[in-house]
Image: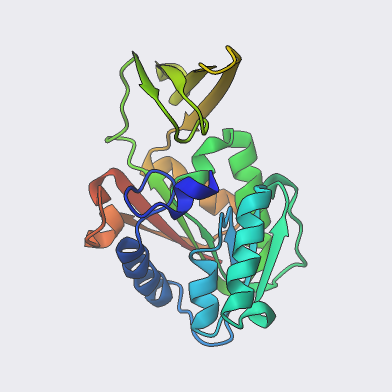
Length: 249
């Protein structure tokens, strides 16, 4: 997975650097960031945003459950002389706990909130709200519910190596849309051709209308929410598929 995050040939796991740079400029402005701002990066992955914000002077805490991603983030911070500005925590974000009013801003981007159930998402929003100082801001990025693929489908392909392994494999995939729950379910079956072993991976994504997410943020303790379809016009790849929410504590 780390390899896919760092692959600049696609944006399947992390956005390409040019897009990240545009987002960071936007985030810097909308979240009122400055040198010495305290920032929480939820599901930080390999620290691609955290380290850049630290380079600009922020004190950043990143949290992610991927050991390879956290190791990479720590190494990058060390190599750039930013270890004193970066703290990376390997943990399930659903279990994160921070003293109240610790941060000036928080990031929860690239649709990561949608992989949790609505109950878990509400809990995470409350946790982040509690961690922010008065006036602190959170940016959440979710797929536009009008752009989500709501068709059932299946597919297959073969490859010599890739996301699912370093040796030849057969990938079988299926996708279902559950209308009453506004949820998509994807199942991936990976047959490893060198040894015949079969792996199964399931992925659920929760869809939210903008009005629903606004209400959830307000219920979590945010005083106001601004909605930016397509990141407010940023020239990102597939920008129209995304909505950015900026919530103020």
